[in-house]
Image (spheres, rainbow, N blue to C red):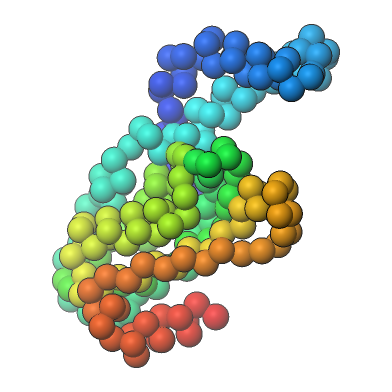
Amino acid sequence: MASIDYKNTRVAENRELIEQHVREILRLIGEDVDREGLLDTPARVTRMYEEIFSGYEANPRDVMGVTFDEQHEELVIIKDIIYYSQCEHHMAPFFGKVHVGYLPSGKVAGLSKFARLVDVVTRKLQVQERITSEIADILDDVLKPHGVMVVVEGEHMCMCSRGVKKYGSQTITSAVRGSFRSDSTLRAEFLSLLK
């Protein structure tokens, strides 16, 4: 699934200053900032920031776009939406999959809009718990379904590559709204269909 088309214009507007700071960080960690392999690193990092922090440029409710009147009121699941984000505590990457289930109440959204929503919510400094709740709250607000459930799986580099170094560990978070909160059978159906 292609990422969103947004760029972080604040990064672009502050390109020179960000590049200077990246160069200084490289110097402060002991690198020779004039060696060949690092000459273009500040510019590359800045271009990367335009993309990986593009979530600041869009209103996540707006990316859902037009909804459609549809009398389908059975469970809809969109699973395995890949995301990449940056931990706000260490600025280290984390990534994984988002799974969404909702029970429409007369409105549905185009399937690609769910992937765009995930991109907008995750492409900024984040924590997995907030991603999970934000997606559920936005879907609940925009689609007004009978219920929504979001499950997010994540592998966090701040846990794998530093500190406790538990490689391959997964964090799983969920958020339930509406009928998913009160109907354990509905929750169980959603979770069983994820397998």
